[in-house]
Length: 271
Ligand SMILES: Nc1nc(=O)c2c([nH]1)NC[C@@H]1CN(c3ccc(C(=O)N[C@@H](CCC(=O)O)C(=O)O)cc3)C=[N+]21
Image 1 (cartoon, rainbow, N blue to C red):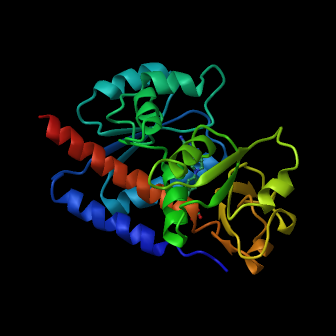
Image 2: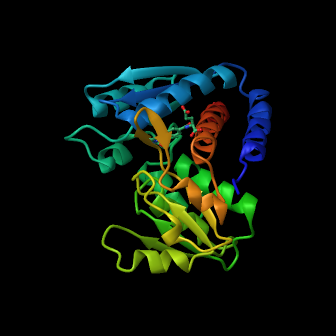
């Protein structure tokens, strides 16, 4: 069975509508890009489509000097929000971005300030994909006490999703696995909820799951020009599975758009 995410996106749109009543201009998102890979191209297309729909002024900037450009847009009063596409070009690390991006414009929640706030369970902006995963899981089941296994420990999905799911009030028990994990299939099978965020097309097949599990497919892999997830579609015959496309990715984009309005609204409050 496939998991529907339309309701979640509709709820995000309701929040955006009410933010629009307070933000009385078209907010601006700057997306900094260095040598985009296929999944980044897909995200940028999705950003373009949605910026139009949501009423956001999106500027995609091919950056040759990320740190310098971050300084520039951090200070530019017309820029409400900044996105830095990954993978980053050689010579830059995620920590460089985390240190240099203005936390108030950091709509992906990657800055040291925003990551730290999440650690203390008080969130401003959190990584959009991790938030999408949490929202979809919470909309599908009650997570309290559930065993959640996450495949992948990236800074933008695995790590923050784990932190957010085990926090007080949500109270899930989370296992984070990675490339060096032993007995991966056995651990996966023990899950009530499996989150696949490894970036390998169709990596998770029926040998990783049990009947009735909830499976969240975070993968955006491009194979022969088509988007495929990290999970083999056959899994949906015995599990509840998020579709790709039309699942986590579409919620992620909606959250990014909403965060641009939140950033613009917060900025107004500063005046
Ligand atoms: N700093 C950074 N943050 C990211 O979150 C990030 C990134 N860099 N680099 C690239 C990957 C990829 N990614 C996607 C997110 C949503 C869709 C998306 O909206 N997909 C839609 C539409 C796909 C289509 O075009 O058919 C869907 O899945 O339904 C795609 C790809 C985020 N990433």
